[in-house]
Image (cartoon, rainbow, N blue to C red):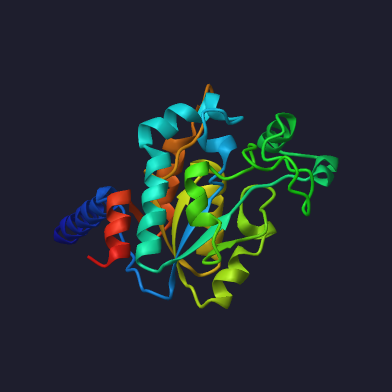
Length: 246
């Protein structure tokens, strides 16, 4: 009888500990900014996502506006420039040859259908200025300089199809602060691949946004995945403070 009570007591203790661990919340490993080893990455800072005239504004505009995304991305640019943190841009471009793909996912089909991020060709800038594929005008002073690395374009969502990881490693970077568009697509896909590649990653949650459609809110789904996967989730205030070393 005594043995039974002891066993029952131990089982109860285990259940209490297990339950406590399950509901205690996720740990926050955090990330420290190290000059020369930390990069700021902005995905798709382009008109089709961030301008009211852009191709996707009808579904992303509410999220962009609520998060103050446009202004917060600019704050990240300013803080990185002031702190001499290298800025990386991973753009999304489609050239005429990309419209010859034999199969596509849902968003690829949509983007090709609405000519999102379209350019005349990889070596042709005719019609590029102020197009949906161009940078938001207010970002150009931070992007169009020889201090900013603009990678080759990614073609779906993640950086597996461009040279971002190569460019980061060649510069000795192993920590990345991420903002940009769109939260549950390119931003999340870049975050996932960088984690898989061994980088530390901090996502700035109010420097991104996503589409809200009948199937769901892309931004809310991204927030859950950010928290589960990357090293830490920051606000723009927290990110700029970390970059400034305060």
